[in-house]
Image 1 (tube, rainbow, N blue to C red):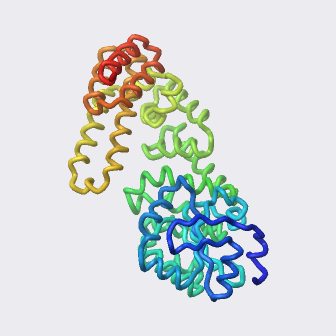
Image 2 (cartoon, rainbow, N blue to C red; image 1 turned 180 degrees about the vertical axis):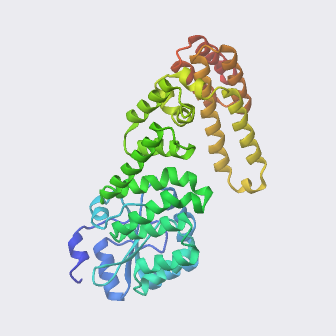
Image 3 (tube, one colour; image 1 turned 120 degrees about the vertical axis):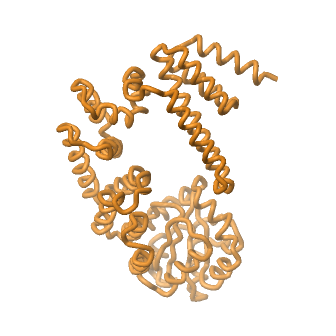
Length: 392
């Protein structure tokens, strides 16, 4: 076995077999076999909780063409990254699934991060087999799919990060944050969640990423102070504050705006619903969200509309998640109404929620929120309903 990564790692691994394309070899045995047969070693790093990893197992790894490609060109292994942490750290595995290819010189030849369907995996793996630079491959894809689409730019930035091109990666990710919505309005959810998470994670390797986020946070804060903030600025102020762990500062801004009777108070308060609920600041929540019953009606109607959509037939699990989300939101609204002694409205909210989803978990959730509001009569009433409805 040649010197290089094989000897550097120096770890013997027990490999978990998932499909017949993957071999029952230790890592050292796989390296030896790959050298002997002039193939690459391909390792699928997964975790037991990773959804895309499970999807690979259900689809891509069962595909006949994928199995043939792997058997013809690689010695393929599957490794649980959480059980083999030393190797995962050595190979800088930071996302799952990651399929890494190692050549006969013990060097990484390329990697694929994230789910790929059968044709997508073969196309990407074939380019790696040819020894093509992974950044060049990613750049070609970006040009082909559209360099003005922030989702495509994010995928390109991930490849840059994997290859430790941190400065350029940060530049691309910040472009997505600053200009992504101009190019793609549907990017709003990704921008406030996954994108910020990726920039924050990059900050662990490249501190300039945190500096860049802090700059944008301070810009939004200044706009909040001088009353020039737009709705998106307020949303950014909250989400950037969460990422940068400035929750107390964001809440202080809310209180400051409350004292000023600022027009931005309610907009900020709606963004801080969860934080205000945790603090039991029910009056503030009602001030910023005056008609929670109507809000619940809208959420139920939105779910029912999606439920009737023919395109949703293929996604029953998504419908289940959306239903649970609506129930969870309703239970929070219920707590708020109880907390400010709007007993009749709280009863109406309870009735709406149970009519929408009269399952046992719904009753338990309502009881939990009634307890949080410290309204024992509501707790007792719900517990009696629960016993009556579900007792054997």
